[in-house]
Image (cartoon, rainbow, N blue to C red):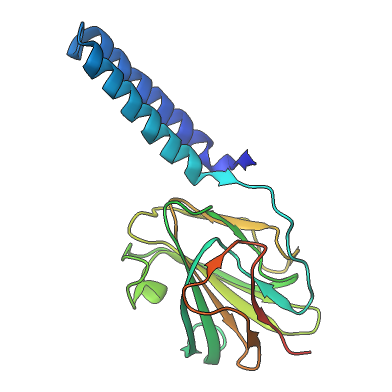
Length: 221
């Protein structure tokens, strides 16, 4: 396991702030009160551990398959439905949504190998991730990848109530590999994936996903 570079500044800032707080507690606020000083130290360690775990990237054997769409994020499947995709396809697609809790791994991965045919970033609100309008009103990105067979898969990084910054590493026109890092949503939220209606969905509501490993759907030949 390693720690993601997106967390470097936050982890350093958090560590320094907690050191200052513990210094103040030891020398001024609770001088001579051993119980209070130890309590502050324990709470500080727990808080720092929570921040660090947001940025962990575990070692995994990634799923690589031309016809399979892998989960772009860790989390729980909360939506599987046929819906109108109005931004890019402007027709009906199968939507699969994964909710990322603050305890999940937050790195996002490319669900298929292909070419980035479309990319857009939208600043927006920070509604809770399960709000019906979060897909269209929250801060988000939209990425469309085209496989070598000409099938297009769209996915969105969507910020939530806690997330305040979406990071991406893809550009229109560039090739990407399935399972490679495409971005990061700081402190969780949600990812939506849109596949063709004739794709075979391999998950059900409530399933726990591992980004880059779990198979969401199988594309037609």
